[in-house]
Every structure is written in C-alpha cells, then in structure tokens.
Image (cartoon, rainbow, N blue to C red; front, side, top):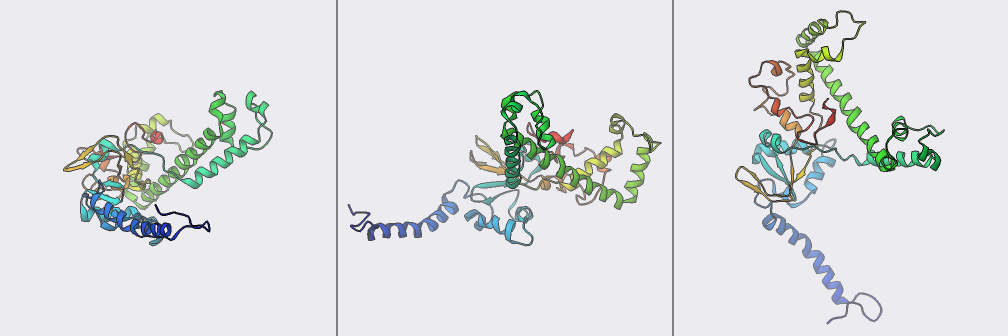
Length: 316
C-alpha cells in the first residue's frame, strides 16, 4: 500500500492525486446520477433544475427583487404539465384536485424570526429568579405581555420553557398579525376600488347595523351572506401563502401515470390553487358573487388556510 503521509508529515503525492481526482470527478458523477439514475430522473422539468438547486437560488435571490421562483414554477407547469421536478430532490404538483386530497399545511420557516424569538425568550427567562418561576409571580422587569401571560398561567412548569415561549411568540407574529393585516389591506383595496361591491356591502351591513354607534353582534354578522362572500373572495385573491409547503410521504404515491417514490418531498402552491381558472372564473378579478351564484360553489378549492388535520387554526 502507498503511504498517505510522507516522512515530513505531509500528504504524499499519491494521496494528493487521489483527493484531486475525487474532487474533479465528484461534480460530473453527481450530475450524471441526478440526470439519469436518480429516482426522479424520469419526471418532466428543466434539466438545469434537476441538476442543481442553484436554479432555484437564482430566481429567489438574484433575479429582479428576488422571490421569483413561485412565478417560475407556474411558468414551468405551462410548459411541462401538472407535475414537474423543480430541484434535484423535489416534485411540484399543480392540480387542485390533488391538493384537496393531500395538502397539509405547515408553518413557514422564517429563520430570522425564530432566532429573534428564541433570543427574546432566553432574555425573558434569565430575568426571572428561580423563586418567581416556581411561584408564577410577575417579575419586576418589563417583559413582553405574551411571555408574561404564559408565565402567569396555570400551565405546568415544563410548559413554560424557553422553547415554548419562543414558539408561541413566533406563531403570534408570523400567523396572527402579518397575514391578517395583509389580507385586510388587500380586501379593503378591492372593496373601495369597486363601487358596486361597496354599495351592496354597505346596504347589507345596514340591515344589522342601522346605528353606526352601536356595533352588531358577531353572530348577526355571520348571517350576512354577501359580507361572508367578500371576506372569502378577499382571502382567495390575496392568496398570502406563496411558499410550497412540501410534504414527505412515507409510502409510494400515484399521480395519474406518474409513480412518486416514498420519502420524496412533494410540494404544491396554495396561490396556484386559488388562482386556477378551471375552478375560479376570472381569477384575477374580485368577484364576491362567485360564492353566491356559482353552481357548484368552489368550496373544495378554497384553501387559503391549507387543508387537512394541520390546517391553520386562524380560520375561525
């Protein structure tokens, strides 16, 4: 055998040759595997996307203002069909019927926000003395109301960990404020931009709110069909979630003639479902009437909150 280290304690020429050859051959070998021998090699899609994740990186980071890969995926579907390979290890499906059957949402991983919440929770926890933790007393230091509410609650001690505080803060900010404010802003824009919608909505609300100084009950508002249609249309057209929400199935799945291997990430985009002209005529138009007059109503494809057992609790 050839020694890997020579008498001077350095790598021998043989070892250096092996390392260089391995480095040179790694990239083309990986490329050949991904293009011809990978379990997803038969799926349609651009070869560059199958070859490297730099394809996705370019559209999400470099092109324009970034965040363009969702639009690129939609364009690729128009070329290659309803199922495509969008990176070396992931399949994307653009088929609302399949989405309704398999979609299960997950909270988007906003890494910076998670890190900030973890830091804030650690700072809050360190400001408490062991006595205040055990007794549940409010510390003298000024701390975030959410953290204080959890700390002073009757939850058991192990439910008041730094991780729990950080996770609760993350959910409140990412799912309980930003998405709500954006949905309201977009819906109000469309209402105020459409006199027909504004007049009809105002007329209906006046039936339960003749006096503007007295707010109606939530139950009476829930009975207003046009108001509910406006809200649903606002959520549909805003389509706030643009991430792919990939799933990993532990079993083999079948999509039409395509057999998807187990443990392969499969993604779908909620925005594409809510803007599919096959189920929503004139998808870019704000038409609350579609929820009143369409036969049948497209309720099955109304997925702004996701679908399945892990759908967003903010729906109610």
